[in-house]
Image (cartoon, rainbow, N blue to C red; front, side, top):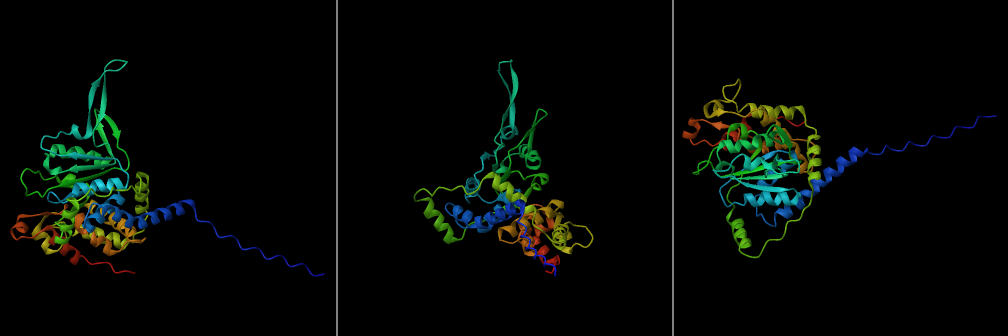
Length: 350
C-alpha cells in the first residue's frame, strides 16, 4: 500500500510591512505631495522667490535656523509669517532695535505676591514659541544678539540658574539688512555659525514686481490655510535624518568645506589669496543634512552631488570671511563659492 503523498505546504504569507516602515512611507508621501500645496499657499501672498522658499523649507525640514539677508521691503517678514501659518506653528516676532535688552527676548524674573508670600516668578519672553522671527537682528548690539545663542543651540533658556526648555519644534529665522547700511552691527562669527543657511533675497524681476504692486494695492489677499502641524514637522526631521547618503557624498561635503580654509595643505591658491577665515565642521554637517532634505523635497530617497552643490552658497556664504585683498579686487563671496564648487572634484555616480 503506497503512502499517501503529503500535502503541498501552503505558501507562507508575505510579511506585512512593519509599522515604523509604514509610518516613514506615509511621512515621505506627505512631504513630497505637500510641496505643491505649500507653494500654492505661499503663492497667495508671495510672488516669485522660488529659490528662497525652497531653501527656507529645506532648513525647516532639517531643523536648522535660517538667516535671511535682503534690503527692506522684500517681504521677508511676510514670508516667514506665512510659513508659520502653513505649519500651524506658534509664531512670535521680535523687532530688534538698538535699545533691546536680552531679557526682552528670553524673559525675566519678577517679584510677585502669592498666598505663601512674595516670591520670584519667571515671566517667559517671546522666545518661547515654535517659530521666532528675529526681525532686523543686526540692528541691535552684539550683547543682545547673543541672547539667542543658548536658545538656538540648546533649545533652552537659563534664568537665575533654572533651565527652561523651549517648545518643539523650535526655529529662529532672522532677517538682516545689508551690513553696509548705517546703524547696523555685524553678527559675531559664533552666532553666524549657528545658522544653517544664509538666504539672500534679491529684488524681483519687473514682471513680478508689477504683480506685487497690483496685488498689494487691490483687495486683501486670500487667507493662508494650515496644512501641517508641529508634530508633522518633528516627523519630517526624523525622516530627513534617515535618508541614506553614500560615504563619497559625505567626503565631498567635507572636502568642499575644508577647501575654504586658507593656509591648509592642498587648498587652491585663490583661497590663500582671498579668504581670511574659512568654514568649520558645521558647514559639512549642514551640507549633508540639507542635501538629505532637498532629496526628499524632490521625491528622492538618496543624496546626489547636485544636492550638495546647490546648497553650497546658502551654507558657506556666511562662513567665509574675505580679506582686504579680495575686497580691493572686487571679489565677492559668491565668486569664491562658485570657484570652490568648480575646483573640488565631484564624485562620480556609481
